[in-house]
Each structure stands twice: as C-alpha cells, then as structure tokens.
Amino acid sequence: MKLTIETPRWALPLYKPCRYKGIKGGRASGKSHERAEALVERMICEPDLRWVCIREIQKSLKFSSKQIIEDKIKKFNVGHLFDITLTEIRRKGAGGVVIFQGMQDHTADSIKSLEGFDGAWVEEAQSLSKRSLELLEPTIRKQGSELWFTWNPDSEDDPVEQLFTNNDEAILIHVNYYDNPYVPEEMIRLAELQKKRDYEGYCHIWLGEYKTRSDAQIFRDKYRIDSFVVDESFGDPLHGLDFGFANDPTAAVRLYIKDNTLYVSNEAGKVGLELDDTADYIKARIPDIEKYTVRADSARPESISYLKRHGLPRITGVQKGKGSVEDGIDFIRSFDEVVIHSSCKEVANEFNKYSYKVDKRTEDILPVPVDAYNHYIDAIRYALEPIMKNKGQSAFTVRRR
Image 1 (cartoon, rainbow, N blue to C red):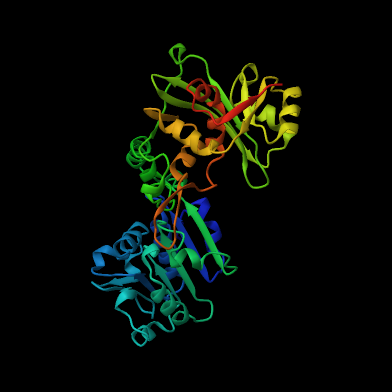
Image 2: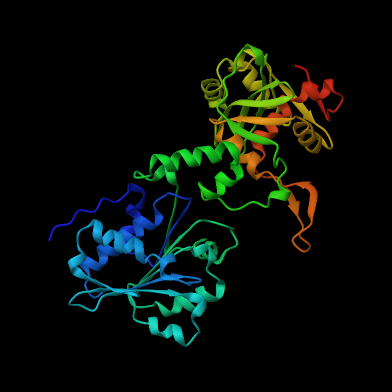
C-alpha cells in the first residue's frame, strides 16, 4: 500500500523523535489538521499503536478530535484498516487504538489505565491545569512515548506554556493562518476584517498572541488599522527615530496629522541594526526621509552626529525631561484617534501591547507605563515634539545643531 501525505513545511521538525511536541497559534492555522494526519499516519505504519486524545474537560465526543481523525481516515481512503465506534478508533487485526478522555475526570488511580500507551495528544492545551499535567506526564512514560500539545495561547503563565519554557526535550512551533497553505479565502477575509475592526482580538484569535488585560492597555480604543492613501490633504509629514540597543530595535516612523487624527503611514525598524547601515535601511523604507527633519533621542548625541554626516542631514535631538513619557502618552491620546497603516505591523503590535503596570498583590492598575513595547511609540513621541511644544504640553526641549 502506497500513501502520500502532504505535510506543511513548518511541521517538518515535529517528525523527529522528541518527548514533547507543541504547536501553538491562532485560528485556521491548521494545527489540529496536521496532528490528526500525523496520528493517522502512525496508526497505519504502527498497527499496535495506542494513543489517547485528551482535553481538560471532555463533556462530549463531538467536541473532541475524534471527528477530524475520522475525516482524515476517509480522506486517505484507509477506512478498511479501522473499526470506528462511538467512543474509539481501533486498528483492525491488531492492538492499536485511539481513545478520547477528559483529564478532569481522572484521579491518581484512574489515570493508571493509560500506562503503556505510546502517547497522548492534548487539545486546547491552554486549558490544561497544573494538576492534570502532573498526572499525565509520569503516566505516559513508555520508552519512546510522546506528548503532543496543540493550543491557542491565552497566558504565558499557563502550565503548558511553562512546560515548553527552557525545555531541552521539547519542540515548539508557533503557526498562524498565513502559514497554512490550505487556509480558505473566507478565513483570510474574516481575519483581515477583524484586524481592521479589533486589532487586539485579531492578535489573540488569529495570531495566537497572549490575551492582554484591556483595562491596562494605554491606547485601548484609541487606534485602528487601515490601508489609507496619503494625499496632499495630509500636509507635511513628521518623523521620529528611537535608537536601539542589543535587544531593542532601532525604530523610525513617518506621521501625519489631519483633522485631529494622527496617521502612522510608514515604519522602519530592526534589532541589531548597525549605525553604519541605519540611514540606508530607513531611507529604503521611508522614502525621502532625508529631506525632512528627523527628531531622535538626544541621549545618543554621537549617533545623531554620525547620521547627520551619513545620510540623515536634518536629524536633531529631542532632550527628554521629567515626565516626558507620560506627557507624550497624554498627547497621543488627545487625538480623536490614531490610524495605523496596515503595513506598519510593529507599530500596531506596540499599540496593542503597551500597558500600565499592574500591582501583582492587588491587581490595581498603576499610573506607570511598563518599559516594553514602546520603541516605535517613543519615535512617535519624538516626532510630535514640535506640535506638543506649540500647544504648551511639551516636556521636551529641542537641541539645535
């Protein structure tokens, strides 16, 4: 019998022997379809394979992976190899079986029934409790056994996330709808629609990013994503530049202000960008930026001096004063809205994630921004300095050169 199964390129690392295999990501990424095909392939090649498909709560088999596995068996035209009952899938003429269970129903004694199984596939693993994980791991311990996990990320504190953190025995892949070669056009349309209407929801549902605490988000309900076209009515642009460090990106932006709306039309940024390459890199992504004033963090005067002589002749420093971050945030929030061009993915990501600190003991939101996801936002603050100054709200002073 010859059977050809097409495997997405992103999944190839999962076909190496490994104790823990994880696929996390957003909707329509093909996570479950890929694992179902992998399981059917193993059942064909290993007639005595025993596997358990698990959810934290398994109220009904209609919510399990059973149907998708059955669909793959039909797709590959191998139904003659299996006996499919209401509760399990058995390999004909052999000892192989796939069963479906909920971890919440297990005790330390009852889970012993899974000893000797070759592996487990945990679906919706973001819901798996620490207790369940502690029961499962030592139970599936047969030589060469594997534990598979698929999930849409919820929180970095979830037990499954911790399992795959700094784990030398694990392979973890993050995949999304645009990585799925078989994603329907309708799903792409729905994803792009939500991207415009609700970027926070888009990031969580479609990109598989962690949920953010919306009431701590600094720019919650203040921005949207759109594919606008800049014309003469937008007036002259503003430009800002934030210098990067070892792990932070050098970030540049082009802005426009029209009808009390702030538009972000272009971005350019990269981690590890050498100063020698900075001007050319930015000019390639923000056309004609060298013709305009570029406002940058004056904490790097040597970098400003270098770029003034090597590609950005009108760059100038904006000196940060006490309260400049908070004042800059307030000024950005004073616009009716911020419209971020759909091509500015890093700016959109920061607007989604930039948040105030939350007291871990009381969960109170503190009036202090977290110093993260703010590099492009800092560049925006620098670019807006002259507008803020004219309105008497500036905590910056411009250093003339």
